[in-house]
Image (cartoon, rainbow, N blue to C red; front, side):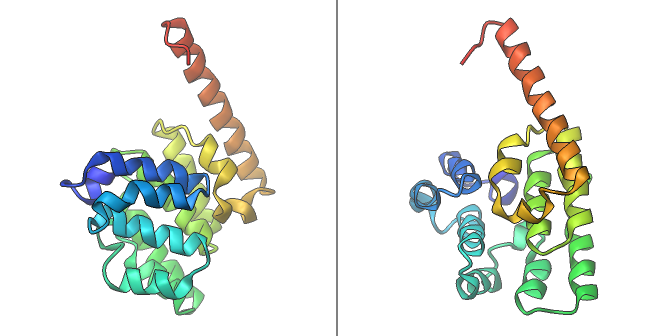
Length: 182
C-alpha cells in the first residue's frame, strides 16, 4: 500500500501500519520518523492524529495534502467541518469508488476503517467484506481498530469477523502443512 501512495518511500516505514492498527502510536511514529516528509508518512501521521482525537492537527495535515494520494481528502474534510450527512456520504462514495476495484486488498481494509470513523457503516462493512474477499486477513484490525467499535454489535460485522477468523485459521493450517510454523 505504501508504494501505491509514494513509490519512493523506504518500505520499512510500512511497519508503522501494524502499530497504528494496534493503537501503539509512539512505536508507529518511530517507524515513520526516518521518512517523515514522504506522502505515506504524512498520511499515517494524519491517521494517528484522528485516532488520538487531535482533530485540529489532523485537519491541518489533511489540508496540506496528507490524504491526497488515497483519495480521501474530500471525505475527511467534510467530516471534520461537520458538513451535512449527504455531502459526507457523497464524498465517502467517491472514496470507495477510488479503491473498490483496486487489485490490492489492503487499502480496502483501511478505507473500511476510515468509513466507520465517519459513521458510514454500510459502506464500511462493504469495504471490509471486499478486503476479506480479495484475500486480506483482517482479524487484527477488526479486533483493534477503535473506529470499528460502533460496528462490533452489528450482526454483519460479527459474521464477517467469523469469516475472517476462519480465513486466518485456514491460512495458518496451510502454512503449517508446508513446514512454515511460526
